[in-house]
Image 1: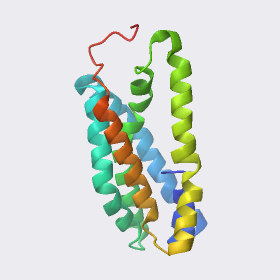
Image 2: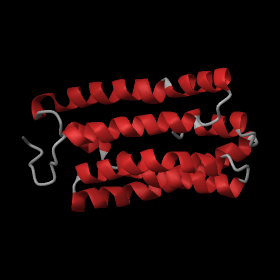
Image 3: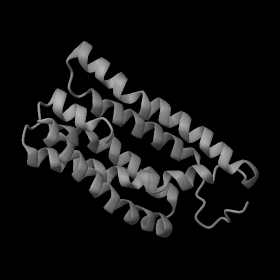
Image 4: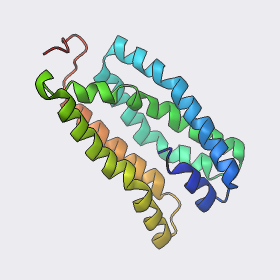
Length: 172
């Protein structure tokens, strides 16, 4: 999300480049502040519940967040990016632990590293290129929102099939 936002804000929504970086930095700061609360919620409620609720809310509220950013006002853009940051913190705060727990101890780091980085390459690395190409060919400024919604739905569906590990030993 956040690696593409400066480009989106400046190229698609015509914010000044410096303003785009400031808006994105505010969102990243909010993400950093929100992640510990997502972690605490996961410790209390379970990682699966936090991951499911975060992904579902992300799928439902990403489009409204992008509409806020498209309003043209810096304040609304900041509001939209703060909304995205808070929503994403639930995933960012628990995804690494959740992925690690999918693998037995003997291959935990290898399995996690491979799986996480393949997903990161597909959704994170190629995302800006894919989104920029689709915007250029269609002129549709909502494409980044659709991309994030698609990723959130993939996360939600994946979280549906994992088991809650809150009470389970991580040494298994």
